[in-house]
Each structure stands twice: as structure tokens, then as C-alpha cells.
Image (cartoon, rainbow, N blue to C red):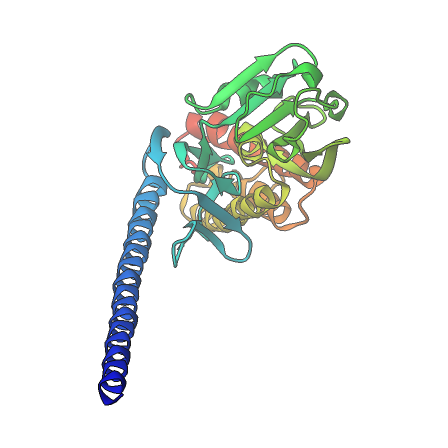
Length: 349
């Protein structure tokens, strides 16, 4: 009996030792798995942080450079936000990059793929700031219509974007399974229900470009739509100034994003108008008497035009204000190019 009891004790001890080994092994294995998982996570975070630096270099604007365009493959999803703080971030990264003083017209989300990035200089009439357009080859822009502004924006699109011009109704347009399909038309009546996008409604957007009165392309309005099973749903209307800003609205196809970047442009116009007005006042004190009226005084002087530009850039974003803003811009441009360039008087800009 004693030997049997001793055997039971030894058997229990052996079982306990095996249990201890199993538990200890599981803890050690869990530790190593945790280390590996944390290492992989840290590597992913580090990679995405490096990707932010890469994206930052891609979107970096050389203020002195001429118009540029490039196509680059980017392996991560990008999120753009534009409000009181403007920021782009690689999804999953701990920190993004701010672009508070740069106008970047882009969809709010871009999936991994070939990015198309174009930069152009915006002038009104002096050089205001560079505009950056960012989109993807996996976003399809479909233009329909015959107006001058539709053709201008179509021809202004970055070369490597996926764009098409159709002469028929958009209703029978085939779903090509792009990340987004953006229909660009000249009348909201052209945004008819689509026959081939059932189940893909969240990928479809519409932009209506309406030219302003008395001009086919210098100013006008952009109306934004998203798509639901019942058809296109209106998101809002905002004005544009020149085809470059109309292009920004089409590239971004988002009312709030466009509005945010538009206000950056208007703020820069306002600040530069003050700068050039100060220059005109300085010239008026230094130039010969026969030049002075070009700078200050009469209603046809640079000071008056610049004050109007500054005023309308500050006021409510509306089609009427943009009409008046464009008139003042053209008057100043005419004064600078046709009057001052033909005299010995210094030009304004």
C-alpha cells in the first residue's frame, strides 16, 4: 500500500511538471508572438510614417516652378481633410501633414494606386498662388455637353487622368468599376438616373458647370451631387473664378472640400491686393505727374481696381460677387498690359 501511495505521488508530480512545462511554454510562446506582432506593427507604423514623408515630397509645391504634372504609384490609402485645419494622412499612420496655406484639390479619399498630381499657377490678374490637383487613374471623369466651359475643363484635365467625352445621355453609360465615376455636365437636367450602377451608388458623383452671364468661362457656378438608388442628390452650389478653379471643383467633386480650398485662394487674393495697392500708392509719389493718375485718384486707377478686388474677395462667396471680382480683375489687367506697358510708367505687377 505504501509503494502504491508513493507511486501515486510520483505520478502526480510528473503530471504537475508537465502542466508547468505546458503553461510555461504557452507563456513563452505568447511572449514571442507578442514581440513579433508588436515588431510587425511598429514596422508598419514606421513604413507608413516614411510614406507620409514620400507623399509630402510628391505634393510639395515649388512656388517658382512652372506648371508640372507627374504620375506616381502610392501603396497606401490617403485621407484629405480641409477645414480650419487642412491635413492629409496615410491611413493607419499616427500623424499627417498640414497644408493650411496650400490649395490642394483632391477627393477626400484616394485608394492605393497610381496618383496623378498636377500643379498650375493661378492668376487674378497677378500671380496669386499655385493650385495642386491630386487624383487617381482609378477615378473616372465623364464629360457630357457642348458648352465652352465643359470643353475648357476637359482639356485642362491632367494628361494621365482617366477622362472621357460622350455625346449621348449619361443614363446608359456602362459601369467600368472605377473607384469613383464623376459625371461632368452643363445642366442638372443631364444628370439622369443611371441604368448600370445598381449597388455601386456610393461610387458615383456629379458636377454641373454653369457659366456666368456675359462670359462663357471666366466665372460661373459649380453644383455638386452624390448618387443614391433614386438618382443624383444635390449637395450644394459654389461659384468658380476662371477654368482653373472649375477644374478644382471637378477633380475634388466634393462641395465642402472645394469650398475650403476656394477660400484659401480668395484669402491670398485679398492679401496680395493690399500689397499691390501699397505699391500703387508708392509709385504715385515717385513717378512723373503724367503717370500718377494710373495709380491713384480716378475710378480708372489701379488703386480703385485693387480695392474692388480686395473687397469682393472678402465678401460672401456668391456668383454676383465673383462677377464683380472678375470685372475688376480684367480692368486691372487691361490697365497693366495695354496702358502701362506702352508707356515709361512702371507696371503694377
